[in-house]
Image 1 (cartoon, rainbow, N blue to C red):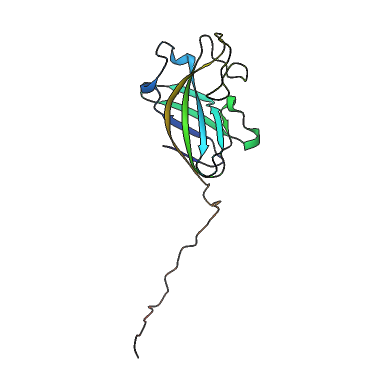
Image 2 (image 1 turned 60 degrees about the vertical axis):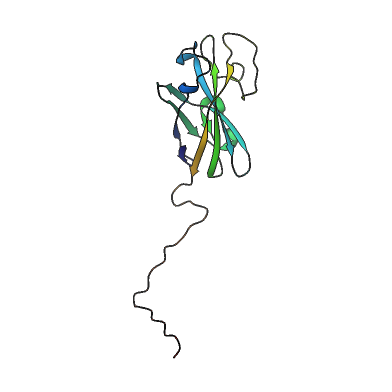
Length: 161
């Protein structure tokens, strides 16, 4: 599970190497496209991480918060709203040549097929699924509760008199 706070940058740590599809590609030639789907309204957001480090046991992905309308999936920007639960899917994208995250060289979604060139990324397939919990900022919750204060004296209820 990825945990993040709304309107802030966040790091995600997910297991991708155990399910790697393209074992011949080096980690420097692989990036992951994440698809976030809101549990409440079904809205879908896509993003590549701003920085991605593939380790033996996990992959760390760095995402930057931005307004929803201005999010650029190729720069690691996400504008996830509202707070709550999102399902995520991580897709392995591999390049034959240098990795280039642009509209013309990196797949836009998991269904995008680009011309076969070493400069273009290829969607290899789904390598990880999970849940992202996006909490609200402390003090800005939509519903706020006040703590019950106990009375200063004892309250006695007499019955039947």
